[in-house]
Amino acid sequence: MIGRRVSCRTRSWIVCLGFLTAGPAAALAADCPGHPDALGTSRTIVVDPREHPRIGTMQYRETLPLRDHEVVLTFDDGPLPKYSNQVLQILANECIKATFFTIGAQAQANPEGVRKLVAAGHTVGTHSQNHPLTFEKMPIEKAQTEIDTGIASVTAAMTDPSALAPFFRIPGLLRAEGVENLLASRGIQLWSADFLADDWRHVSPERVYQLAIQRLEAKGKGILLLHDIQPRTVAALPKIIRDLKARGYRIVHVVPATADRPATPTEPVEWMLHPASENVAVVRWPKIPSFVFTRNETLRAPLLSDLNAELPRQAGSSHWGVAKAGAESLAVPSRDLFEIKEGSLEVLMSTSASRHVARLARTNAVDAISSRNAKGRGRAAAVATHGGKHPPAARATAKRMAQNANASAARPTKLASLKKRPQ
Image (cartoon, rainbow, N blue to C red; front, side):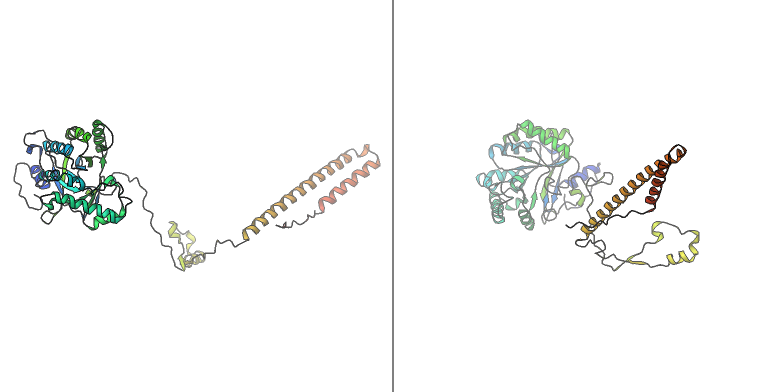
């Protein structure tokens, strides 16, 4: 029993542990009269809505503190006698306890259906009064009216109003921050889900079964959302339950904590669907820290020890002694150290362009002079080589050309200054 000290002196400590974690509403397969092959309810956990106000990893960080291969069955939108009664019978045949999120208008129309849920030991929460699919955008005052009226309608249908659990599920899972804060302030736990079976869509019962099992296998555990007003759910539910048993899954019942029924002791990590492990690499980027820039007027000067360097043998000399005993801090660079003043960039670019043009002009001029001198020297050499075979006039011409070439090489060339063109 939850909250009591139990002395276990049976042949199997495992059986005792099962009773400790189960609770008064738990039912094992062996305790299901007339159905020895029933799946049963493996244990009951007690939750405190104020400690964990939002659950279901489809929308929130936390989910129920389930172990591997544990499932919580939840049903929305009832009661609708034609189908809800069949769902109740299927669960009774398997001794399974579930959680029902009831619509206020449905409870007003079928109060007996609400009382059947309570009599069968299921947990009953609420699902608004009229199931509007506008919770994410309606004014908070209207949302509060939907929530409060739904609670009042379901409570009125019960023989014992205290049987209503402070559990709520938003229609369509259309979350809104205002609604979440409102429910949390009133101690009402907001339920999302861990996976769906799409049984509200126009799909076959076989498809409902396939989606329920496939998505559960992908998660390994969690809260399954179904609807007890759908004929396809009634047709698929028996096969889902049989497959859960064949695959080794166990059903868990959830009830709210009360003054006489304290919450099941848990650790925060148990409320994570798949908590991080030291053996599994984290696949998200680490959070970037918020840096606070220094306001000091000086910064510490780097030392050789910061570079893991050793002083050379001349460390004892006056040169190294001055370096070693130098300033221990450096002035913080001013903010305008790398600032480029207005207009300076244009001047820098124009000056650089002017220098480049001047270099090109000088290079071209020198190349032209060198080429002309080379031609003059070549002609003079040719005349000198055949000096004895040419007349005096030719030798005089060659001598004059050689003198002109030497004079040109010795005399520097003046280049016109390159002035900045007007903009």
